[in-house]
Length: 474
View 1: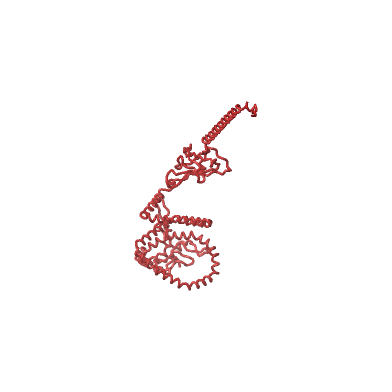
View 2: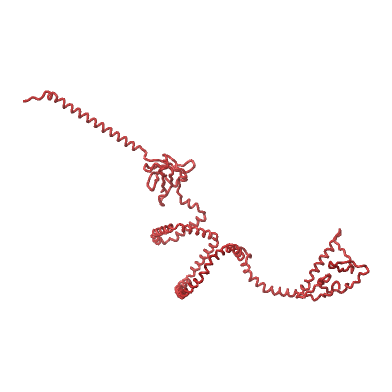
């Protein structure tokens, strides 16, 4: 048999031992690598668990608006964080701390926040609605504060009611109670009407869109409506009277339902008769058209006339207001209306007083006819007598009198006649001195160059008791 090589025989046993040592070393290396991987994984998990995955910010509101810890913070309608705490700031405002998730953070400058209500049911159903600032603005650091100029508190219903005065709140309470009384016993009808609420909203939406298509016209409508409401507010007393009178009219109509029923029964025949009347008037429309065509050239000048009339009407408006006050002024016995009201009583009084006054004037006519022309003589007497009694001394007033008869005569000169003294021997021999002058006419005691004295009235007041020949001079 051939013999194996010497080296193969001598190395057989040591080869098996080396393989076992190599396998053992490889197994220990694998366990060490697995342990290191587990350590790294545990470290990563621990880092992830201990890492803060949100950003916190502080929002300053005028009031917390019934926010509570744990309320939702929303951005664009999505839940983006929570309310972490609510504190009181140094200036007595609500300081709300919120946390924002990483996918919505960080926030940028220009961010605003507002407290909103999630629904009408519930009390603490508020959330914070955040409107992030644009991305090109600088980022806000964790713990940054949004001041009161960037936040808005929710307006509560009681705050709205507090803006109303007591009288308005009382009226609103009356409306609410009246609505409750109105729907009492009509719940089924109210539910039936609620079915039409959604179609009404849809119709309102279409109406709003149509209005928005012509916003300029709608704006003019609002402006004109505001002007009309302002004019109505100035006449609120008259408007209140119209409403009160309308209410009284409706009440009267309601109290007389029988007559109203008869009117409704008679209304169809009246409408039919009116229709027949309009049919009969139809041929007249041709004549009316020809009249319109004939007046067309004249109406072209009407517009310039109305433009020229506008300033006149504007200036006349204050006068018409004054004329209105002349006929109707607040107060008693101060306008024509009050005068017309008093006219019947005056007429009744005048039926008896006017005949008496007419008789008294008729009987007094001769007296006035006699005394009227002597008025200048009477005034001259009073004036002369007052001058004669003007001197006074310690004993009182006294009169200086010196009777002189025929001591002067009237000279015929260029000045129209003047008094000149007579010689003492010629006094008392003038033919002008007469006695028995008991029927002097007015002005007979004066001599005038033109011979106008004495005065004799030849009219209704003629004085038959005077003699014009009894006067001074020839």
